[in-house]
Image (cartoon, rainbow, N blue to C red):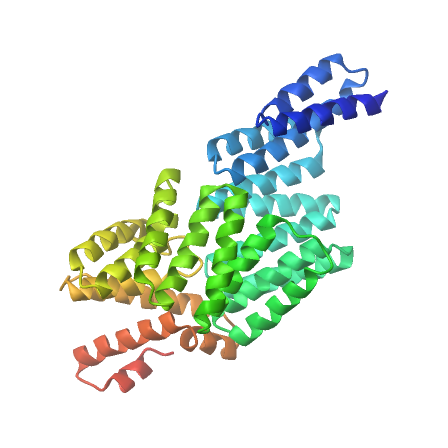
Length: 410
């Protein structure tokens, strides 16, 4: 008798999704709870419906609906005292905080979920949360802890035989190496990730993230045509995902690659579309790279007024959130410095000093001397920030830039 209830609910749920009425999932679960011969099992169904509805809403950038679904599901699973469902809802809550830029809240929710997963011996949940905490750590520039968390996640997924989780940990480790400037290491990790594609069916979202990381790797190592291919793949996948946040993120990468190919009109179009998406979503912090890209293009064309207007918007975000909640905020800082300097704005030196301070704070989390040097010297933007700082110090102290560079302690 229980099977028909599940079958009936699942059939109607699939039909509901096909008709683009996913909210009916929850209403159906409640209706069948009243009608069913075994109503005690159906609150858990409603809870899982909320979990999937959250994912649908999040993919479509409907953050308000996503938040409502997850709190609704969280109340149900806590009333049921179902720790496993509660863990997944806490992870969802943390994911929402991370995507909307509230990193402190995301960390608190992930850590609460991790504590609960450890208490009930839910090892897959632990690995998933370690993966997310690792990503959150490198988004905040905590590279040392990020390495440790991703290594733990990878070990956990391997022990469980979870190939999809293992692939995600491999991909994120490659991204971390990329951010640090260890391009040789990044290539090795991404090669492993590509190899896993033959063993497991990845979601469009997983493939989308991998394509953007590969585009960025090719772009930063000078292979702009390959970068363009990956970036276009990423844009196509973002359209399949339908969410404007995904499309905006892909367009920023595409715009950066177009700059590398000196296709400035195409780059401007990509940055402008990305900015429009971020603005529509009310995600000013996420729009920093798109605005910095437009400022860079305007500066290159001696349109100093346009460049300054974009920089003012960027600085307004950075004043409140110095890292901009970006995985690599220093390109924006460098562009702001250059535009302010070109316009004779007295804030230029302070912006450069802030960028250098943050750069060294990031570097200080890297315990391996070789990787720390890679971070400061292999990443072009980081190297240029330090060079600009050395010139500024040299001018103040009346010494050669090389000696001033040594004073920076890098």
